[in-house]
Length: 465
Image (cartoon, rainbow, N blue to C red; front, side, top):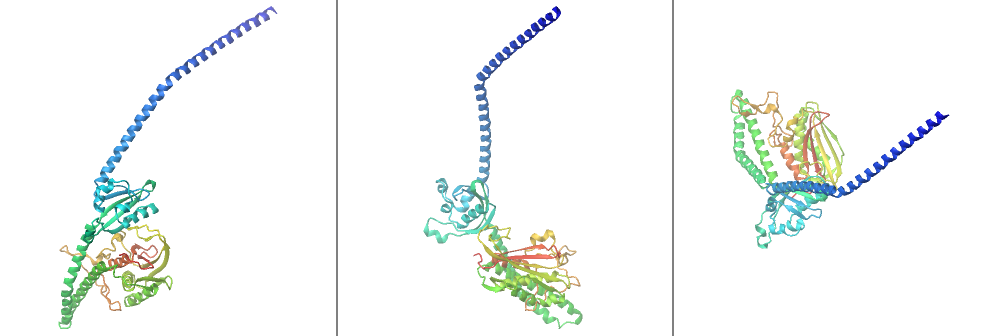
């Protein structure tokens, strides 16, 4: 019993000592915690100030870098060889570079004034329209127009000349719009010089070629029979050159007169297609070709009948020429309504947002089609895809070679016209279609592998001035 009591006494003393040590440690921890908290409170303002100062320094450095980048970009734009201007969400001119001031004839005092409407500073409704279309479409837009500067002196209005200009608009944040401007005066001048040169050469060649042809035709039956083949070849080549000259003259006339001389009238386009095919029947029957027309029998359009008939003749003739015997030439026609002034024109996106009716015409053959690398060039002058027509002689000079099995390229179409392989047919097509505010493009048709020429025309004739 005595041993048990002694054990309990020792255990109580040990537990008491442990509890005392624990209480002592807790008091020490609490004291240390109070001291650390006080030290942290005393150090907090200085640490926050240091951190804030560091943040401000970094922010200033970032702002300085952004300012340098902005000044660099602005210096580039200011000295750029093309014009640039920025318009805010209310069509007010915010800033423009030196080239834009020169192109639009903006006085430095006008730009230095408070922000004003673009139309007040530059009296160009086409430029204002481009800005509005770009903002509404929220995509890059392009527009060509002739800019006529407005002089403050009324006595000089008649002396001011307009010059062609092209604008590229692109959307900016906060409904602002940026516009790049370039003068097309030099390009138009070079184009006019080229056309004038081609027209002058064609005029000079027309008379001697006619004389050579008359002489050759006169000699054809006055020489020995063995030499008549050479005379016939001379007549054929002279006819080919005469056709080339005639096409050059016609293309030059179209470029000078269209679209101002378009004589639009309402007609049924399917009937015109049938008339064009009938006029080419002498050619199609030689190959036993059939016309597969897919579309409505009644689709009235307002077009220049003579010009569109020439377009159909050139397209159908091209398909007949490259179609294999006993083949089919497909013609598809349909109409559509769109809210884009020219939805199929990728080169000149005017982004007009008014509903308009369009017709689409496709002429498809089953021939070899266009080489993929040549598709961007098929509407250029003198373009030909047939490699057998342009071979290099031993002297290194490109010459026309006609295989023995090839038929004459200049054949009658049955209505007095001549079938031409001058490489100008599609260029004439493009010129006429664009005068009607339409466009034409070429591709290879997946089902037949042949060429597919697609024309888009507005149903109502409102040609560009």
